[in-house]
Amino acid sequence: MEKMKKMKKAAGELAQLAKIGEVMWFGAGCLMVLAALNVCFFEPNILSGEPVTLSLGSVKVDVWGADFLPPGLSKVNFLVRALMFCVLCFLVIYAAKIARKILLPMKEGLPFDESVYKNFRKLGVFTLIGGGLISAGRVLIDTMSYRAYEVQNLFIRDKIIECRLEPRIDLGFILIALVFFLMSYIFRYGAELQKQSDETL
Image 1 (cartoon, rainbow, N blue to C red):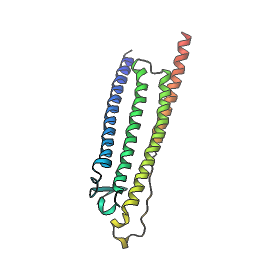
Image 2: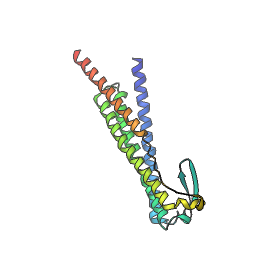
Image 3: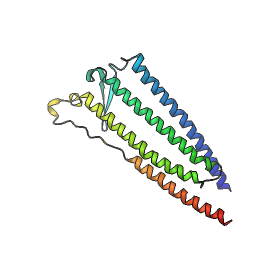
Image 4: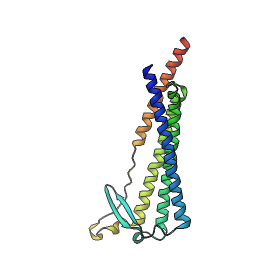
């Protein structure tokens, strides 16, 4: 009985944190949309001459955008990054909503409710799709930066044999998705045992 009370309390607190996270990420997404609109319509030249940080593996290089980017390309680069951030905000908010649906039955003392394992499975599928989108977005941004900034011009030309882009994709999201699928299986098995126990009473 004591463990059940602790579970209900923990589920309620986690659900509240998920709700706060939804609000925070929604606010961050709105701010990014406002920044993108400002760059598009009100201050289109705000990015010209601004320093830009290029990531070359573990090396970070600060360059002046206006010296390397063709006119207007800095705006496109910023807008693509803004779009990817908004997609990330949407993914986090939706994932938080699913997490709250998982925690709701637990908060009511029903950890093996049928909806729990279904939402775990949904969260696993969503993690695979969302992780794939984020990874593809990172590759797109890296490719744009590499092509736009003529990276070879940042170094001593006669010392460089070749300059190439080798995008790296973080597949950690697949492991996270597998964990969610495993949790779905565990809670589904628990739901079946609970159902059999209720039928025998």
